Image (cartoon, rainbow, N blue to C red; front, side, top):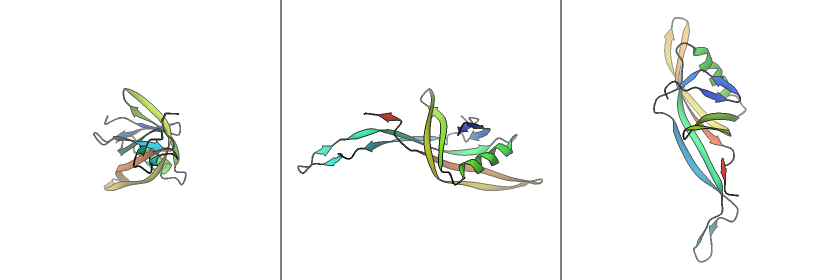
Length: 132
């Protein structure tokens, strides 16, 4: 997985996902009827399941410009994106938002500034699986 790229908003970026950094999570989206009844019974009104992802992105040493383009795209004021990421033995494409990101300045190599280790989190806008 160390050389897996990212497709975001229809653009394939030649960046690498740091080995063993990708995490997938899930949470349940509850409807308006969820909660506890007067007798304490937990009322389930699950609308669906959302799958979120977090990872650390590294530049391909042979194409550092793509990392710069990815950084500009993911940090744009438009926080909503469509991403394609690994899911089970295939991929999943979904609309998401990005709350924040962070990377590290690694120094200079000649006239080039080296940036590395961009931590990002993709939060789904709506459930990818629905129970309705």
